[in-house]
Image 1 (tube, helix red, strand yellow):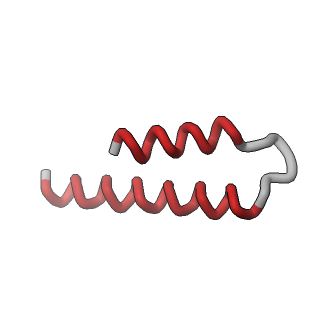
Image 2 (cartoon, rainbow, N blue to C red):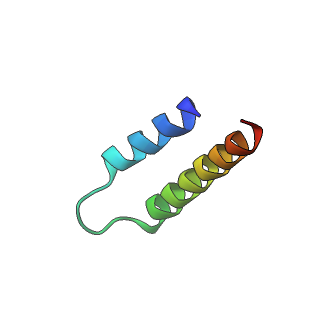
Length: 46
């Protein structure tokens, strides 16, 4: 989880204020989905 959060924070820090490239938005969505899935799995286990 720490690695996903690190990747997400890194990507968010690199996002420009305007004209965000579609590839960055897709990567952000993918990381957020992975993190949400991991959190859901942890909630089921714990």
